[in-house]
Image (cartoon, rainbow, N blue to C red):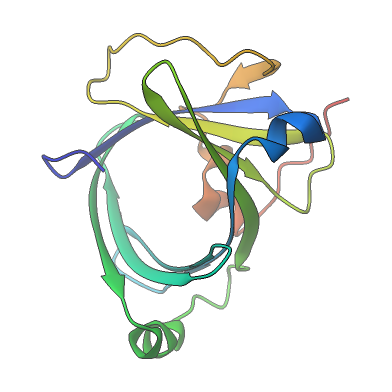
Length: 167
């Protein structure tokens, strides 16, 4: 999240990178559960497991446009996480993913690998400005940008996985 409380990110649907590429990333396992909440907001809890530690966060996002959101994210303890899970939205499945983080061009990139896709993944970059220029990392085969495609948010994936297998 940016200092001013806004999240500005671009999202890309990419061909699944090879294992050699993924091995050079900082990996974590994420379980993301969406909660019942207010209209026009997305609220979730996340459990993120690294090699030797576990983090819990609670996040509320309000969309301003396809690229910009107001984001309130805070770290929580395991008990608060468990309490918030009681508000899980029963219409949404928890999202499981492996997050692979790496640096390129002075930016942190997050590559999400989901168990329901064999040939594709997400790639995200968080920007400081909506018009900020960047170059995609080498070794990435871009399928298309999905920043403005509402089917490709994690919240949308918790409801329905697009029926679009890429070869």
